[in-house]
Every structure is written in C-alpha cells, then in structure tokens.
Image: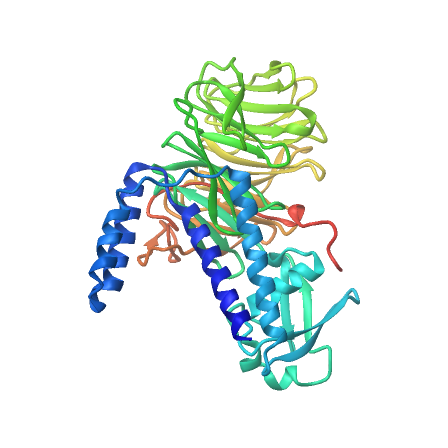
Amino acid sequence: MESASSRLGELEKSYSDLAQSLHRPTNVRYTVLWDLGKILHALYTCFPQGHGGSMLQSVRSLFQKPPPKPCTSTMRKELCQLRQQANRQRWICWESDAAGLEVEVAMLSGRSWKFIIGNTAKGVEVKERLAELSGIHQAELSLVCSGRQIRDDEVLLTTFFSDLAGPPPQLQLLRIFRPFALTCSTDCTLKMWDMDRAACVQTLRGHGDGVMSLVVDWKTRYAVSGAHDCTLRVWDLDHCICVQAIQVADHPAFCLDFDHASSRILTGSWDKNVKIWDSELGVCVATFSGHVGMVKVVRLDWPRRRALSGSCDGTLKVWDLDRESCLCTLEGHQDEVWSADVDWTRNTALSGSADSSVRYWNLATGDCLATLRGHTHGVAAVSLQGKEGRALSGSWDRSLRLWDLQKQECLTMLVHGTSVTTMSVDWVHGKALTGSPQAMKLWDFNRQTCEHDLAGHLCDSVEVSGSSTPVSVGHNECVTSLVMNSPDYFCSQADE
C-alpha cells in the first residue's frame, strides 16, 4: 500500500510539472514575470529553513538555457499518458485500501460497474474511473447518490458512507448535457464558464496582447484563439493549457475558424487576406486574396473544401479551397460586413452589416434571398437556423432580434441594455450568450427573458443603463468573442 501511494505521488507530481511547463507563456513580458514568480516562490519556501543553497540554485535557474520544447503532438500524448498512469495507480491504491468499500454504479441504459473506492476517494476521481470504463467524456458525467448529485470535491466515504454501505447499486451515473462557454478579451485572457452556475471556472493565459477571435471544437475539446500579439494559440480544454503557439507575423487574426480533424485554421486579418494554417506544423499553407478591405469574418467547411469571408469592403466571398479561387462574390450591403453564419448543408448564409441590415444568401447562385431591416445600428453578430427558417441578430443598437426568414419579419425583439458585439446561440434550448464592452448576458429568447448576468474575476459590478440589475464585465476589459456549446456538439452515442 505504501509503495503504491508513493508511486501515485510521483506520477501526480510528474503530471503537474508537465502541465505547468505547458502553461509557460512565450511573450517576453509574461516570461519574465513567470520566472520571477517561480524564484520568489522558491525563496519564500526556502528562506525560513535557511536553505541558502536552494535559494542560489533558484536564482541560477533563471539564467539556465531552457531545454528544447517537444512538438505539440508529443506533449499532448505525454500529458495524457501521465494522467492515465496516475489514475490507474490511484485505482491500485483503492484496491489495497483496507478502509475502502466496494460499490456498484448503474446507468439508466442498464450498464453497470463494480469496483472498490478508497477511503479518500473524491467525486472527480470516481468520475475519472467511470469515464474510462464507460468511454464517455468526464465532462458529460454526473454522479448521483440517494437522489443528490455528488460534487467533484466531496469525499464519498465521508459524506455518503451509510448510503454506500447499503444494497447495490449505491451510485447512479447520468450522462447529461452541461452548458459551458469560452470567452476571450482584450485583457489577454480566455475564460471558461459553467453556464449552469453562471460562474467562471478557469482562466487561460498565454497571449501577450488583446485576444480578438476564438473558435471551439467542443467534441474534441480544443480551441483556437487569435490575438494582437500576432499569434494563434491552440488550447487543450481538458488540461486547460496552450499546446501550440503559431507566429502569424503581419497577419493578426481578427477572425478565424477551425477544423480539428484536418488540423486546419482559417483566418482573416487587417491585411485583407484570408489564410489557411496547419495547426500541427504551425505554417501557412494557402493565402486567398481578393478583398479590398479588412476581413472581419470567416467560416470554414473543410470536408467540402469551401470557405466564406466577409470584409469591410461590403462584400462576402465564397472560396474553393482546392483551387484557391473565389467561386462567387455576394454584393448588396451598403457598408462593412461585420458578421456571418453559414448552413453549408443547405448552401445558405446570413450576414450582418454596418448598414444595419441582415441579409440571407443563396451560396450556389450568389442571390440575396431576403433583406431583414429593423436594427438602427450595425449588426455585429448573427446566427442562422436554416432548417427552421429562423435567425437571431445582435446589434450596436442594444437589441437582439429573432427573425422569420420566409416572412422576412421580426418575431421578437429583446432589449439588451448595451451594444451587442458578439453572440453564441444554442437553438435547441433557445439560449443566446451575448457579449458587449460592458457585460455578458445569457438569454432565453423563446421566453424573452435574461437568465444570467455573468460575473467574472472582478469584484465590482456596474449598472447597465435603464436596468437595476448589477452585471460584471467578466474580464478586465472588453469581451471580444465567445463560444457556447450546445447539444449539436453532444456526442451521438449518448446513453438515454
């Protein structure tokens, strides 16, 4: 037992050290602060015991040449292997724990498992084991005992001993959809939010300047962000670390899209170009020129080798990625194109413009199918539900509008209170998460209610004009982009 526990401690330390090394930023300013923080921590730890040698070694470490950085795929693999080894060593400890208890865990589908949990086993550790046994991602699992959900930090044998000592199955495992969101800001950070609790649960750091764009693949739990520091960063959301930093030189990504399966990132920037990057190799593999204004929105359909871009020149362009050519140009807006969404299956798109209008397009013919008017300021965010013929738009006129595309009429208008600059929509549940320079809000647009004003890491709240509801900006500065997950991303193999 003592040997197993010792091995577990070694593996967990190795895992922690590797994860921490991957958090290390590449920006010079942040690197200096990072090293200074490590030295101060070492001095604080060693000084009371008078370990002069340890202090000297800590100071010297600042000037040591860092070891060569392994490639991204190697780091990911090594990190996952260490995590698996640590978990399996923990399960060995449980099996040999004299104070442990055998439990049975059952799902509604009829699947069940029996194993011993240790005296100090926590909810999150039990879910990690069940994730491996069931093949379901841990983020989708909820563990229940006697009708109450078990928190990740709860020690099971301390809180639920009498229930766990009862007849099996003592625990129930549910597969649930848990709403999360990832946001980015001009304060150089990204934040992960638990939407059920309307709380920030993780802050991701690494960019050296304001983060402008963000996209998330919720199935693989990878994200890509673009910032003013002229880098693209690939994030592993399971471990909350940056696994790749791509230098983009004079092409800071104002907008981007991502296909994880092909390792392709599509970006648009101030230089009026659209580019494709290989996220593993960190190189640009194609450049598309044709716009005469800054590119403000891009959408990627890698399986069909197509892309859409919208620009300050007032046009949208559909691109053939194989031939590296423009298939058609969508003209009609009288001012800059600020936002777009695409239904690639139905070959339709939606765009929002600084001319206050929303346009619905046929991508095959380039025809404008509908022009939606009602906003009194630029439309900064749009979302398309092609199957149902609906659309949602957010504008600088401080409103959200739900549209019927066939009738070309506004079904609902929601007063936001502040200018809407970014938006993410869950059409299944009728929810929309919106961002602005002052606040983030979660809306139920079917019920026409604001469910949450999201708090962030700021203690002080501000008042929204015309509302007595206190809200927090969520970041130190403007929220530039956000992505909320939805059942569309929920794995199809769910156990009902």
